[in-house]
Amino acid sequence: MKLGIGLYRSMLTKEYYRFAKQAGCTHIIAHLVDYFPSMSKNGIPATDANRNWGVTTGDMEVWSYESLKKLKDEIHEEGLELFAIENFDPAHWHDILLNGPRRDQQIELLKSFIRNVGKAGIPVIGYNFSLAGVWGHTKGEYARGGAVSVGFTPDKASEPTPMSLGEVWNMTYDPNAPVGTLPQVSSEELWERVAYFLHELIPVAETSGVRLAAHPDDPPMPTLRGMPRLVYTPQLYQKLLDLVPSQSNALDLCMGTVQEMATGNLYDAIESYTKQNKVCYVHFRNVIGKVPDYREVFIDEGDIDMIKALRIYKNNGFEGVFIPDHTPQMTCDAPWHAGMAFALGYMKVALAIVNSES
Image 1 (cartoon, one colour):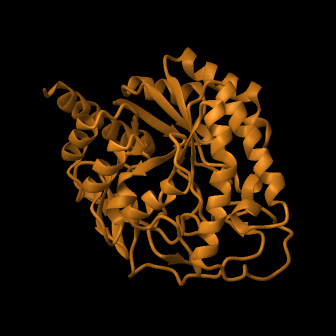
Image 2 (image 1 turned 180 degrees about the vertical axis):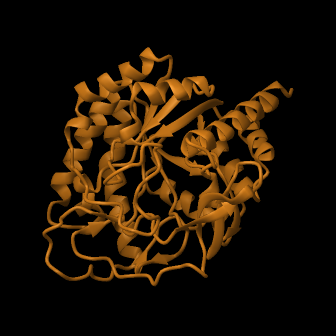
């Protein structure tokens, strides 16, 4: 079991690699999507939690073999390994998600990305097959000591707004789209779309030595902004895996999101999916509450018994990477760094304890 960290695109620099190394990490999960139009100097997204993340760049160069190999080499030079790329840019696959006119063209583009990732020696691509994406969270002093975190809280919730044309995954891919809203989609239609996605891409992933790792819906609700969701209970992970049985059809198991789900049991989910060797990497974060009312908190104060969870991973022979995903911001001059350092320190000790047990 390995310790890692997820870094946003603006953080893919020597400074952040060295921070990761100093905190005890061995692996990096890299985001190539530029979610946020601007970032503060401390790495905190400048956007509100509830706003559209921004206009997507559609930068294809970052997915070229040369760029991926360069990124992997830069990370390796700092004594770390690049384990996964997390998320496709909506500009590259919006018509796959929306069943639009360029669907087949975009699926060929993603195939080329997968081949480049495999050629560069990067073993995993994480993805979230979602229309509404991550939406509806608010920021507040939700964690211990008034630390700022995010939550899904009825008392502060915004009215769910219909999705606009030119928007998917909480990002704008076409700022010049006509005024209007996306048509309604049934749950069955969404499952047909992800089945097409997997049937087309899994064979390419297999031959490229790459695993595709699905993230569950966050917030895990049956619908959001009038759109259906795919994986909002732990059992729906299995439905996704069964669409195309393959070791390349796998999971990014987000423990916080699974714990937030209204039904099901996180420990049972870990047991089931690690026994099947379907978990590539883990978002190791803690929460208090479940939909429709939950808050992200420090790793040691939530509803999840993190040591108990780690023992299940170990007992089932899990050899993947754990990352904090995101954490509450601590009250200091470097709130992101401090929050991450706290989480990583806890994780490093917890892994050492569990690994030492016979």
